[in-house]
Amino acid sequence: MSPGRLLALAVLVALAAAPFVPMGGMRQYVLHVVIQIFIWSFIGQAWSLMGRFGLVSLGHGAFLGVGAYTTTLLWNFYGLTPWLGVVAAVLLAMLLAFVVAYPCSRFGITGHYFALVTLAVGEVIRLLLIAERDWTGGSLGVTLRAPGSDASLLAIQYADKRVFYYGGLALWLAGLWVWARVDRSMARSAMEAIGEDETAAASVGIHVTRFKLGITMLSAGLTAIGGVAYAQYIAYVNPETLAGIGVSLRIVFAVVLGGMYVLLGPTVGTALTIALSEYLRVVFGVKFIGMAETIYGLLLVIFIIFLPAGIYGSVAALLRRRRVPAAAPA
Amino acid sequence: MLTVTGLTKRFGGFTALNDVSFEVGEGEILGLIGPNGSGKTTAFNCISGALAPTAGSIRFLGKELAGVTPDVVCHRGLARTFQIPRPFRKLSILENVAVAAHYGTDRAGSEASARVRATKILEMVGLPADPAAPTTLLGAGGLKKLELARALATGPRLLLADESLGGLDPAEMATAADMLRRVRGELGVTIVWVEHIMATLTRVVDRVVVLDHGEKIAEGRPLDVAADPRVIEAYLGEPIVLT
Image (cartoon, one colour):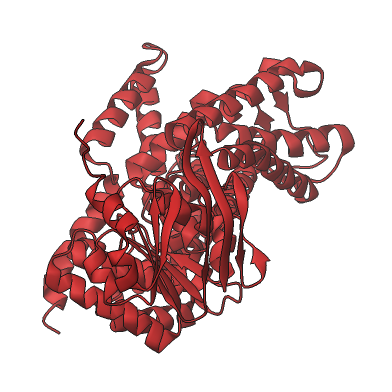
């Protein structure tokens, strides 16, 4: 077994055992933070599937919102289990992605213009959620209808955080698996080619529209799953936390910070941003409203200028460079 | 195998191509020549699907190509190179060719078989098939070869080579001309070669079509065409008449 695999296995074992390690009175809090890291990392991975090919979306909140509200409303109004609701959520998010991405691809809306279109879509979904208050509770949001007991598989609601911890872990691993699958496929080469030069890509037989739609719908579907997971965990949905510019930019920031071209980039970035925001929350409390956002924004600017490959991406590239001379003589 | 009839392309009020017709036979190397701005590249873009012609028909292997998208044109067995090489910089040399080998045909095999085919073609054009070698290793000549390799990887029956020798020194030009002959000889690919350097072209092609101001002004064997007064006039300019 290679050292890398051994390390990965050790990390997995540690993660699996973590909920049973004694942590004094901090266990609930630590679990809460780690669960959020799992879920938002998964969402970051979904975003980076598009972002790494130059399809920068500033409106992924739209897919989160569609996902989270679909399962929540189906459960609250019709009692449909989120296990089935998530299927509807994914299909709806993919439909929305299609409706947005098809005209963009067809009429050559790329780069900054594509980013602006997605930005608008994120806001439209947020405003729709606020406007349809009879259903969605407007800007106050909706609480998931509680099941009869403390632990309900049907409703995916559990008082014990450990259930969500393992669920989140599984989700995160699944996200890594999808990312690695895409990364190793020939489709990645095709997407890179499209991202660089659509005309040249088409000339070697690559169906540009099909690929762009495919990756966008995949990303949207996974993001919707992330939204459902978050809604089930928090048991409350709200247009500000699950749609619109704020959350959309937070996803982008985390991924850019960690590095969108490497497997663990979104995870590292998400862990850092969540740790940062928790730290700032503890330090500033409610004293300086907006301070956390200001520091976020400042860091984002610094990172885009000085570390465009992200923290993890830059470290990984550095390690690779140091390893190459050692391996070269063979 | 390729029949172009009455091909016309207008950009607003400007007529880039006017009623151009020619034919390409199986196994032939046809030179499409003309001075700058004569409509060569426009003709090329219409045939490869990058532009939709205003009028006229392009029949390839018995099927109409006018208005078909570039990826479908490629799947039907017609590949092109670009006048200025357009490599995919984020991909290695091998991946550039492998992606074309994988997606260039309708009957896509496994990804591994695409890499094997790409390796063979890279060997044929004389580029390293090391999967890690980046395109930044290549100079102007190397990029032209990569452009050719990528087009050939799609398994074409007919190759449209756009000014594939521009920017090369005479020695490189001679090698590249030999390469096109080998492409026809070894892979059985029919070639339409767009070029404005007539000297290199005449040694390789079977027949030439000459365009000037969007119209066909001559067609025939290279030496006959080179002696044609209309061609000489198009290349050297009209005689100045003093009054």
